[in-house]
Every structure is written in structure tokens, then in C-alpha cells.
Length: 162
Length: 426
Image 1: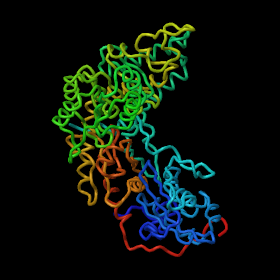
Image 2: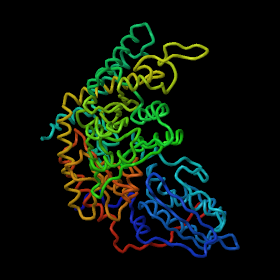
Image 3: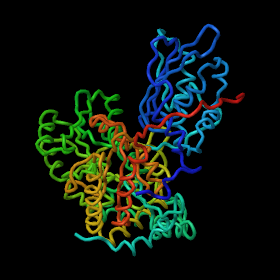
Image 4: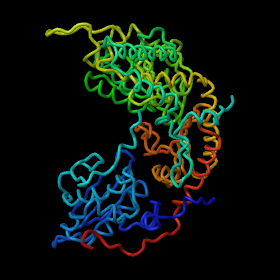
């Protein structure tokens, strides 16, 4: 039964382009020729993202792939991000801020859902520093402070209860 | 079994009058996480702050005498609620988590050693797991878990088998699972554990709000619960312990209020219950908690339980009829008002977000029961939990919304559009 609140509008975070990326993601899968890779998860909700990058000799992201599991926001945002940064220089990707990520995503997110949206951004930033074949570095988790947005995002935990 | 007069009850809860997303009425079904406050609780706390608030047990002046009387009267109300033998057995703590940590640190450090076993259920809340993991790290004891079967149940035989195998020093379990909704036979399992000499702690966070509790009948050594889940304030909970147990335990937090005498060399501890209430206690919260317990008792704990069971069964039956929905929990006759579920192909956060769009508040995630979710093989579930103010109409609206979730997120041959421009310099 259709319901007036379900229709797409400016307030709906599941806008058409979000659902499009969720169902038809950009470069979903693993990249055998990856030069850099990283993965991370949001322990609070179980969202997982893995990113494979192939950086070329000009310092550009020649190819960017992701794989993962989780909510619409976490997976669609990963697809949007990798589509957006492929072909950019490392410096350009490093400059791509958390604010840029949220604006790329589009619909306004509450602090708790911003964490879902920023997971792939954190993993991507981590991947730039992790050449494949080197000693495995610890995964990015939601609490990880190795790459933090300049502005503080994310509200109180969704999970604490008692 | 019959339903409560929700029309009258709902008038007692100011927040239920508000609207949420798109001006729709609030349908609050996140009661297992925290409940709402009736006006009586808000008034009792206001009254204290407005007219007689002061620190307790300290000042010889009018306000301190009045505050102390109200605080101790709250302890007596709580004793009655639990049917404890003595008010000395009722310790006010910051919540269920703080209460369990107090037992693990005080009783645990004094009584548990390497090789001992702490036995839990796989369905325990993290608050009843982590303090024991921490105790294991300090003492070398082991933490063991009783599993659930394929119907999400735990039989008496399984409990007996694990008690026999591990002969635990402590058997600590929730009277009701905050995720599965299962209500466990507390008195029977306590009595079985006692035959093996185990100390027993009952996490009553999901039981105290919903039905009559008689700690003497249960016969457990410790029973703990939280204020905010019984329509009371946050920041307060109760640690009930048998007097002999609490007497024999060392104090945990040290500070003002818990001492008889302090010198430059050391200190002697106060009697119960002050021994475990270091620092200025949650005075106004205790007064609010007592008001909440009186409010619920006036309605009748067993009447509340019957109401929730009817709504819980309606939710359970409705969910099981919806294509692609899997209820994570036993059949309705074995649980109260909690129903967790997953929807095929849709993450629990997206379920919750969609339901919020219809004004329905549910919980999504692992509900602080990660080991249980790992055992079941799901990362997250959505959970609808009802309370005395919920109605059958609200349950039906939840079910109607859940039935529409899959259509929203179903694969429908969508394609990405053109590449979007990027970044600050795009």
C-alpha cells in the first residue's frame, strides 16, 4: 500500500540516485592488480568496506574498486566515492574532505547515518597509505582516529543501551 | 488476559502527544532500549528540585533532613517492589551496568580464582559479559556460554548439562533476553545452580519493567535492574544482594559516604547499604525511581505483563505472515513484548530508517548482544518492543510499514546515471 511519507522528496535519504548506486554500484569487486588496499568496518552496525586501488606512476588513481556489506547508505556512498575519485591524483583524493563526501552523497543525513556514509571515505584515505604486500595494518574501525574528519561527525552511539 | 486502558495511560505520558516525521503521531516501540516517563515521575523530581533538594546523610538542616527522608523512602519503595527482606539489601547504583560491574569487581575479585568458571547465556547483554571478561583477565577464570537451540530456546536439560560440566562459581543470566524476548525460568534455574554451589546473579533489566519480581522467591544472590527501563530516570539502577553476601564483600568504590572512620593510615567501611554508595548518590533519581515504581505498581505489574504479551503475540504473528521476514526469537508463548526480526535483503538500519519515516521508532543493530548475533549468523536485527502505553493499532501500523519495506528496497533493474562532478575544485 503506498504511503504519503514513502515518496521521494528532499527529506528522503533514499533518493533515486542513492538507490541507483546501491543496486548498480560502480566497480564493485576486487582488483587483482591493486597496488594499494585497505578495509574497515563500523563495529556498531556491521557495515564493511574493502577498497582496492591501482596507483599509476603519475601519482593518479588509475582504478578504484570496492566490496562490502551493509546498509544502503554505506554501500551507495562507496560506489559514489570511487566513481568520483577514479582518475584523480593522490593529492586531489587526499584533499577530498568528509564534507565533500557528505555533499557528494546528497541527502542530508542525521549524525548517526553520517557514520555509514563516511566509512568508505575513511577506508579510501587509509588505502592511499597502504601498499599491497606490506605488513597488514590494523583495519579502520568507527573508533579509529587515524583518519578523522576535521569537523566532528556522528552522534552518540546507536548501540549503548543500559 | 486483557488489554490495559491505554487511552487513560497515554494521557499520563506527555511525550506520547508529540508528532514526528511528517507530522505523524509517534509510535514508540523502542521500550527495551529505554521507556518514557509519566508526568508523576517528572513531577516528583521537579518537586524535590523546587522545594527541598539538598545533599543527603550529611547536613543537619531542614532541606538535608527532608532530602534524606525522601531518599531513604525511595529505598523502602524499591525494597517493597522487589520484596527484599531488608532495605539494607537495596543499593542504588548508576544502572544495571554499574551494578554488575560492582559485583564482578567486589564479589568477583574476592571469590574467583584461576580455573573457576563464570557461566552465562549466549544471549546475554554486553553489560553481563564484559565485566566477567574483565574478571577473567584479572583472575584467570574462564567465561563459558550456554547456547540457544535452533528455535532460539534454552532447555532445562541444556542448563543442567552446562552446570554439571562446568560447576560454575557464578551463574549470571538475564531473566529476559533483550534481543530474543525470551523469558527464562529464573527460580528453577537458580535452584538448579544452587545445587552446584554456584552464586547466582539475575540481570532483571528486561524483567523488572514487565512483571512482578519477588527476590526471596527467586532466591538469587544478586538481582539488578535499571531505572530508565521502568519509566524512571536515567543514571540510577538497583543492586539487590542478599545481606550476608553484601556484608562479606569488600567495598568497591571508595569515597565519601561509604566510611565510618578515615585516618591517615586507612579507613573502616560503613554498614549496608552505604558501604556500596560512595559519593553523593543519585538522590533525585532515586525519588523519581520510587515514583515510577509506585506508578507501575498502581496499574499492576501482572496487568502490564498481560497487556504486553497480547501485543507481543500480535506482533509476532503479524511479522511471521510477511514475506521475507524472519523473527529472531522463540514462539510468542515463550516471550514478552520484544520481537526482533530481519528482512531478507534489507539491512536493519534501512528498515529502521524506513519505519521512522512512518513515525515508528524501533531499534536496529546488535542491541549489545554481539555474541548472540554471531551465533545466529546475522550482523544486525530490527527490534520492536512494546510497553504499557502501546496499543493494538500501533502494532498494526508497525506491521503495515514492515510489509512495505521490501518494495522500497527491492531490486528493480535500476542503473546509475551519469558520473557526478567531484570535490572542491570540480
